[in-house]
Image (cartoon, rainbow, N blue to C red):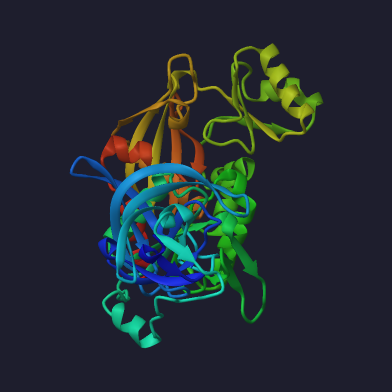
Length: 455
């Protein structure tokens, strides 16, 4: 019956009593199938043996100080295609919507709508059988004044306790990134995940800026934690330098990250600091292959791509013929490579020391799968707690200092000649080391920032 339906304009104010949202402006869009609400810091959890999700909402457009902490039953996680063609995995919740004096349950997805004009999109599934839309009208159910909004949200203003910290990375679902966000929030800081691809810069001598999705200016951060994947090194480090230009404290500087990603240069820096490494050769001509192999003691030997990471681009050549084939194959692709002596006595094991602010906060032994020589956790290696020697601790701390890294994953191998340094990682993963040691490594990273601010 027509008289039982709510008549809406193209824009309306609605409320979500169960989420604690007294009013929020919505775009009424019958062209959209699913409703969507703006949400950040989205995290699933278990409540009474059921799946729930918690999230934060800034209900007022262009106002990040007003925040509502929400939680709701998790209905689904599905792929949603936006009007621009962008496909995104979103959590789906069910809750009651109130429009005027009428209330009913709806499903809606959670997503970052900072680039949209409305915090809420009301789709046709939520309106079906209950609503008529007059697209020529707006706010047919009334519109709150600025004073009313201020009064409704007077208890939702965030107190400026703690620091405003950004995690500059690519994947918010990655264990390490989620743990850092969680550790910062647990210590009372305002944490923001900043997707590298959604940041862009204004280069200006007087007013340099970093902008984010939707045109938001990111100039009010106290600290940034760069977690830059190798494929994003160039742009991620450019953004980190821009934050440094804005006098924002960065946990690892752009210069330190850049030089740590250059395997050849990093080895040269480490050697200049008196740190022992496996004998290593570097060349840029297939004509030097034979002498290059002899230089590192012959086969078996390791061939590494300079741009490789997490054990990718690392090959064990067990014979001279195999070594020649691998080296020449890489050279034919114009790839920069290192050849390195193979430490057989290590038996597929290495040590990862996690260094934060000049201190080894945790250490594990990584062991490769049977038949594999690379001990990386991402390649199926296992982690176990190990007591590192004073000499190994000294090497790890010295290596992080040589690379000028406040946070570093330092990989060491035990050989008949003593401990040798393999590599220094500027964005070390937390999952393996936290899982094995049960230590709050993410919390130590936050404490390093607090120490800089003398908190």
